[in-house]
Image (cartoon, rainbow, N blue to C red; front, side):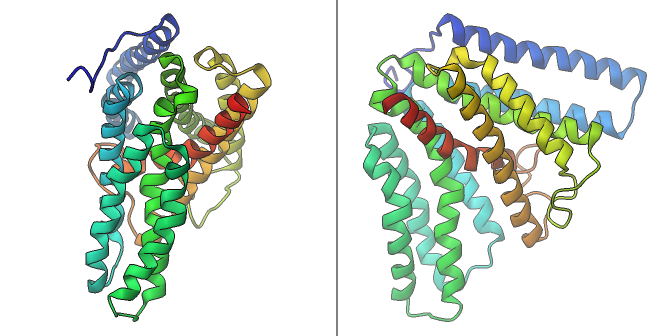
Length: 317
């Protein structure tokens, strides 16, 4: 058990962030409670439900960020498993594809084992190189060529959405070069999680307050240029002032924070298009007020991998 959760002792900077996050949640809870009493309505009801879910999400992500590397890998691996399951629930796969699903699910422990061991080369090549070749070949071996091209595209792509991006969060706390001081990896992971979620909030807020010009009306009608640009700028500024969690310099913080906001928006847009194709509002109902697991981590699926590689290059090169 000591190896699973070696300790939860936090440095002063990490303690400050945890205190800030919980202060925001407590303050928001009090504001929403008063708002609901004084002016009840559909909007505040939606916000209250979302806030309740945020309490749960906050505890889960803080545990993942601050626990030991093994606990982080196990927790994120479970998250990847559920994300894959949500995707496969909606994909109209052929009967012959069912046997290959097991291979896709087995990719979860393999990828996170590489992350836990800090084996960078295997980690970055296993899914986009070896499995992108192996899975199409396994599909060919079933002997069913009807609509095989569709399956060849869907199944490897699901690994990138459900596993590859998210697993970079585990590598942040497991890569040996990034964790000569254990607080560095934890700080980077907490920085990524906090900034990604703040970006979602900022884009939602600016979109509600100032949104007039839609970016992609046929994919996600609620996304506007005002929300996107407002979120991009505010997230970059917030990331700059949260830089004490990282070993990055000022200009590096600006680049990294901007990239988190940009790629977070891209992930949200991609998952929105997937849901539009499936004809559903949410990919699941596991989290009240937020839909399924993939609905909640859509931004992280595309923000985590660029974040890791940009930070990796900045620190090690």
